[in-house]
Image (cartoon, rainbow, N blue to C red; front, side):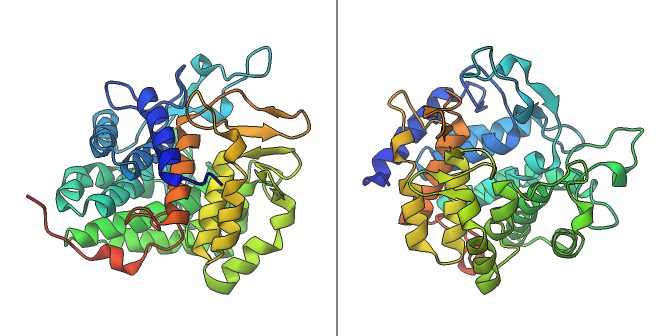
Length: 360
């Protein structure tokens, strides 16, 4: 692990600031690709690094682009093709996407900002953003409890739109933050509490409702650790869940694979798994795991996306904003640098929900 977490945080935050545009948006790369989830992740990292104004500018941007139905439009970075040399993402080919999880994640970002600032004005400023986003999310919850992964087209039946396990875990976490925002502002949150409970029941008891378009996603690291990262699984159950498959996903000395069958360890997955380990009290394992990412720090700014161990190359040759952001948030979790160091690690601590008065 980098021995000096604060300089590494500054290194990552400087790269995110270089990517942030004048309108507050934070694309994946200098060449483009924008989605509200990774934008929010980057905003949280800026907050940890002490760049509160830049973080607020990022949330202001979400307020500007939010649609009337509450959705936060963006692009599908996961479908962006590679160039002819298989080294760089062709960002210009990113396709539009309205994703429920990407929309809902702003709630966790706003709560994280508040835990850092302890200023109720941050919640008051962005509560309309979160409320509208959650209205859109809940409009896509089926009778079975799961949330469809994308906006439903006019001709579609909601139950026919697939739901993603990882996306619903993330929404489970985002709803927790939205509930805490309402409570801190002295507002009722019964609808959000009920919706979150229904997602939890669906995730735990109705596996057939998720990832129906895929033969199986058991090989995806995020599907493995997200139930712990989001707080759905806790205690010994969570510990057993993570440790049972660690040898499938973790390459010693390198990090966490994105998928089991590919020798590709990625910084973002390694950082998220680090925070999931923190959530179950495996602090030593977490620190060791995060340390394996050190060689992927890039002197040009940020961190390389990942390491292809068979070809012995950084692949792709990209340094996304969200990769740098994940490193910042994981370093905060491991070293407990800010008051928000545990916000992303499982269930949010109870002492974080105490309402506080506005400053100034």
